[in-house]
Length: 272
Image (cartoon, rainbow, N blue to C red; front, side):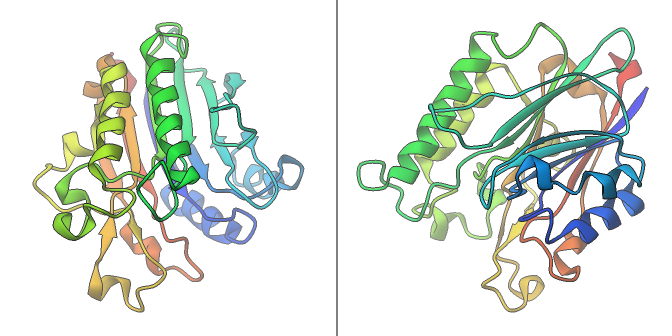
């Protein structure tokens, strides 16, 4: 069984539902995980996406901020979510796909951005980000997040871990999203379940790779000051089933774009 799974921080799903529809029609992933939907569940444009064949939708939203949603052409066996750090933020939704004898769990995350000052003592947003990552680490580490099924973790994790995941390692070392303490916390999350960064399995770590470009750049392509904030990880046994990765950087030039672009992975589950 072949499954194509994509992740995209859409930066308001209602404002950019035309872009989502375009991506669904042109790329036709089996599953699309959206972040920063900024939309309560009762206002999510489900009908628009169901008309395109995505009949199975798991929104987890709130008014004006945050929010995640997973759209699928494959039926869900189960939908769940977790609230992190005792907050009501809509930052996680998990779905279990009906993929035959071996179900596939997909975790869709929107990790807090962390504000501007990388000091948890003076910046509550940064402290929240680090606490969120610690809770992710512990949750996956103690096995409570899964029942032994293969898992994929995707989303805007708001951290660019490698030197080649940012346009300038030296200049961004003290900028939130690439500071050593954030990278250390993300590495601990990844180690908690031996997650495989399948994007970097297919695109060598030596190669510059970005999924986000600031709106502040008048010409994002010319300056190319990007960061790789959007990730696709798999549980250890699933990594070898990933047969391809695509980063649709051209979507950054679509009309009224998100500042992020879709990242897609293809899985051949018959390899498991």
